[in-house]
Length: 281
Image 1 (tube, rainbow, N blue to C red):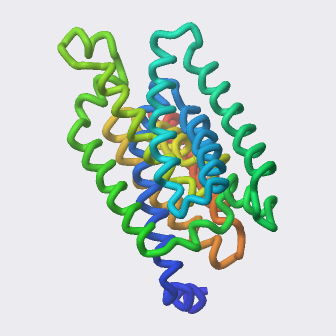
Image 2 (image 1 turned 30 degrees about the horizontal axis):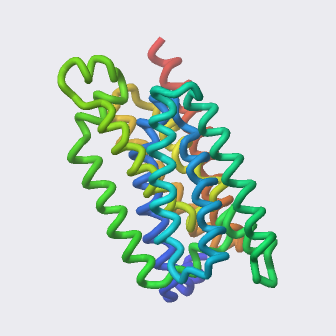
């Protein structure tokens, strides 16, 4: 097995996949803790469907770099979702459901009506489940992912205290002079960037797993916000790395394999958490 793995690691596309996978998993886990605690977990699912719709339009328009359309559309949608969840008649969960279903249906309709691809079903499957897209990354896409990932991590570290305050008590944060609305928008923009990056890793239907599972797993083991965040990041990176390696060796879909590893890690953390709680009592 190790010889086979060493053989595959000689190829640049395998190394690119591992680099991008680890970076995306790290970024997803950082914001995942905040989204779970704010009960806004499914924003990742909604934005991923928006990204799918934008990607469909970009494909029909023949854009060589669909990121030019997908990223701004997803960011704008994230801002609208945060705004609608705060002060509109349509509350957050309903707004996410509307945008999610609408964008997914619109994207698939556009691809059916105008696509010139000879393998439409394969293209849709790859976009939705990320079956092989991460193994076809070029050097430019990898560098773009690296730059955006570093930017996300830097923003999170610089504004960690503010994000912590907004996560647990927006009213108290506002009373102490923190501009809660501004930091909510910052969180929305950052998660939109992560969603667009993660499209290549697990596809639009499985992105929520990268956001939710590491955070929920870490919460079974730690109680402090910092402890959960660090544990979530470590678990997410390990699961993504393991999932990609297993996928390459076993020939399984990358996105689904990563999600399966995340689910297994969650089960192990639940077991460990139960054992720890039992000993404490």
